[in-house]
Structures are given as structure tokens and as C-alpha cells.
Length: 73
Image (cartoon, rainbow, N blue to C red; front, side, top):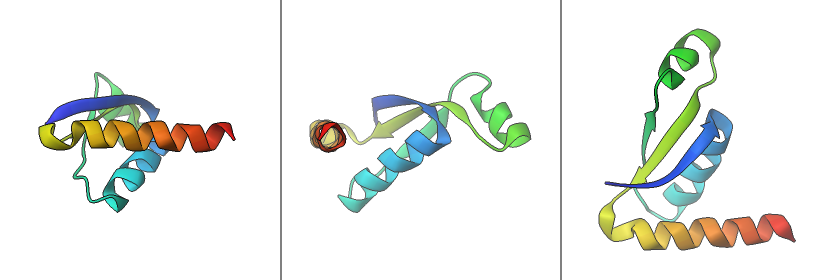
């Protein structure tokens, strides 16, 4: 698995995870530092890394880029 992006919170991570999953790209989330503890006690995680398989990394990057272009319009 390769690191695709770091998300500031669960909401952003869930959006990206949904976009990638809808394209059939497997996703693995990992919380950095105290991010998991904040999730457990506060209900919302922070500082989340999104990983995808090595062979799907470029496809995932392109999906994120196309998604950000739609947000700009």
C-alpha cells in the first residue's frame, strides 16, 4: 500500500474513501499520532492517512484531481 493523501478529519477521509471505493479502489485508513485517541474520546478522528494499492496509486490520484476540479466549478 502507498500513501495517497493525509486528511485533516474523518469527514474529508470519508469523502475520499467513498470516491475511491466507488471506483473499485481498495482503501486503508490510518490515524497519525493522537488522531485515533481523539476519535475514541471525541468521536471525530483527525490526521488520517489514506493508503491505496501500489498499482492503483496513479488512478487514485487522477480521481482526486478530477474531483477537486469539480469542486472549483
